[in-house]
Length: 330
Image (tube, rainbow, N blue to C red; front, side, top):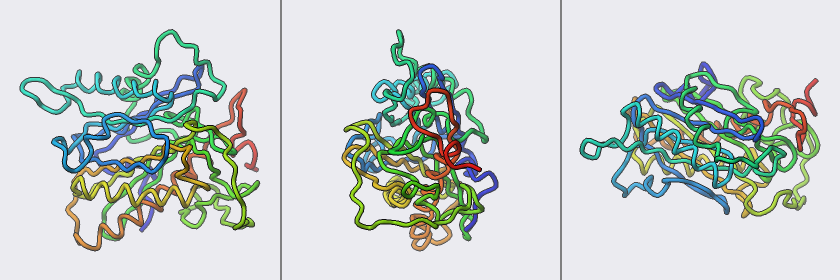
C-alpha cells in the first residue's frame, strides 16, 4: 500500500471536503460531501459523545445512504452545523425522496471547544452559518491543522487540529481518513516531538522523526480535561462497494488507529466516534480477504491523520496550548 496522490480523504473519487472557521469564536466546521449519496455507518467508543442522526446509520434502518457527514466544534451548539449543510443541500435538490419532497440525510458529530479562549458570548448560534460556509467551500483540496472542525481543538498537551491521510491498497482500493483531534490524551511521546503514530508514518508526512523516545510502561496518566471536554471525531472513506454492515465493521476496526496515535484514548472523558463511508465505485476483488486488509489499512490511515492534525496546527495569539510547530519545529 502507498499514500494517494493528495494524501487526503478526497483521494477517494467522488468525495469533497469543505472547511469553515470563525476566528473570534475559535471554532469551525467540516463537511464531507459526496458527488452522490454514499453508504455510511458509525461506531462510538468514547464515553461522552455528541451526535446527530447516528441511529439511522444502523444496518437495520430504512435509509442506507447519506448525502454528507459533518464534524464541528461547539459541543451541543455545534450540531446546528449539520442543519446548515442540510439547508444548503435541499436548495441544490439533494436528499432522500419522500413523494415530491427531498430530505437531505446529514449525520454529524461535535467536539467540545468552548473553553479554548474564544469569545463564546454570541447573540446567535454561529454553527448553522459555519455549516453552510463549509458546504460552499467543499472541494478536493482543503487545509489541515488549525482548520474546520479542528480550528479550536486542543489535546492533553498540544493544540489539536484537523488531519487527513489516504492509502491505495495493492488491490486498487483507496481508503482515506479525516479527523478532528480534540483528545484528552497526548499525540506525542512524553515531552518530546515524536508521535505515537510514528511506526505507521509514510513519506515523512509528519516530520519523519521516528520513535526515538523513551516510553514508561508503568506511567499512570492523569486527566488534563474535565468530563465531556474531549473528543476525537473521524471519518474513514473508501471507494469500495460495502454494505452498511461492512461499513460499520470498518469503522470499528478504524478505532484501533486512535489507540495507536493517542495515549490514552477512548476514555470516559472522550466522545470518540468514527464514521465510515463507502462510495461503492469498486466491487471488492476478494470479498473475504479485502475487508480484512481494509480494516488494518483504515486503522493505520487514521493514526497517520491524527498525527498530521497536531503536526500541522498553527500557532495563534492567545493560544492556551502550544502548537507542535511552535514548540518543536526547527
